[in-house]
Image (cartoon, rainbow, N blue to C red):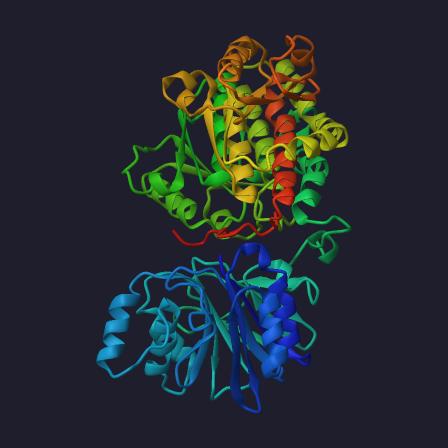
Length: 609
């Protein structure tokens, strides 16, 4: 969640750190700070607020001048957002930045207080800084290794020792951290975009490995302090892909990138008109073994799982359970050998999803990861892996990552159904062919529905609360539409299966309340229309997203606003129907004066429970 950067090299370190942190703003934060070696002393500047506030403070107090340093954007967990709780934190001889949570920090803090240590902040991070300082024996690697043995939780650390003014040290456990390298320069960062303006070459740190950055390059040791060699990786996208490219916000840019993202994701996985996931470790023989499937995810990824449940059960006739990762890991789930557990995560570092996957593996299940971030923890630990090739997604509210997750789930469902002899090869080819037409269909919706959505968004600005309703796949999609709106507009929104309204929720309907309904599934459209009439008669303002065929059959007055999308393969309608819901959320946020890329209190990569 927090963002970590570090730099060793000939450039102005303060400028590099602040610039790199701007590329991590999407992760969510409420304060920022940097620490730089200046004349062999560590000078720290930090503040509550945004990076602009940090830049203003640097102008006021003076920018640290040096070539070695660390920086941080904090998302508050322990202690309120404040200057004193901001990172970096220090002991007498050690300064650190930290992402994650130290679960046993209270016990460690009590121990250190008993040793005469005093604390300035409420954070678990300062406990680590003080513990490093307490254990410091003049050897940074031995000291870090000793402290690692004491820590419980998930964390990534950037560390500077006062005695070593030409070095930055880094270590991680669970939380993401990379080490970038260029000619005469080295970096640490929570994510690749932070360093892309300087280099595309980087190393992935594994758990409890310690990196040393110096003017001579980088070196690594394992948890036993033995030197190790690591594979150098190269990012397959550049700064242009991580910049706005003329769009006012990343969110609308990424909505417009969806047709390309779908095509990039699915086309390499189709061979002779059929899905081919062999490169992902998935074969027809292996698929025939699975008798039960559980999809585990959080937030938007969980909504992908809800669509997947409908599609897999419909096509492959295998029971599918969708579980929220934070609930799954604590309820002693029933899992056995022969079961498949699918973990869906954009970042591949979602703490609850990672823990859920490990639990499933312990219980004997086979795991399949669907992730966007290459080399992430979930990607590395899963038995099988499908990458969604969405490219960088910077806006906190997911759009193109969601739509590529859907695309992958459809391909998987088609191949699973074929393996189980539930569809013929000809039918599978037909479905795959329909999926290949989705990029064009999504582009059509963007081109033809944006202005209508933009107008309707003006009608939502003053809403205090609203509902999303649908049936079947449309209900699964309504869940994502509702989440997207509340994430960026801050309007209270809930999604309900349309048939459930009269079992209590219809009591919330009052005059003028917006109700957004999705109706794309022919067999339940009459039922959905009946539910729309029920809320309409109680004063609701109806916004209907439906197929052009459905729109032509509507009676006058059923809906106040209609957003028509082209009818295609009904099973695939969530791919096109989600687009107007995304655009509605975006423009509603804009009209309310919100920054859709950085919603309050939210982070892109949720690396804590």
